[in-house]
Image 1 (tube, rainbow, N blue to C red):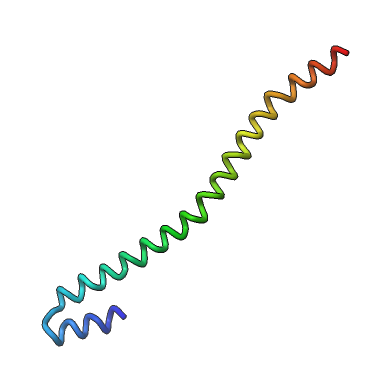
Image 2 (image 1 turned 90 degrees about the vertical axis):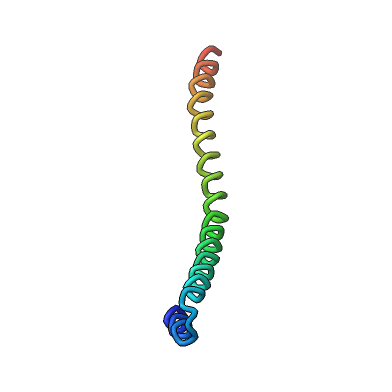
Length: 72
């Protein structure tokens, strides 16, 4: 696509305009790809953080539970 648009831009004498159009098209593609990756990354990060918090809570509560069960 890029080579074709550059060729058309050279033939019509509007190479600069064609290069701007190419950059706009690639900019939209990159933006869409990043948004797609972030939509996958956000839930994964949420699960990882929930796992870390759960681990910390268990690390605190397990010794307390062991101490209280030993008193009986």
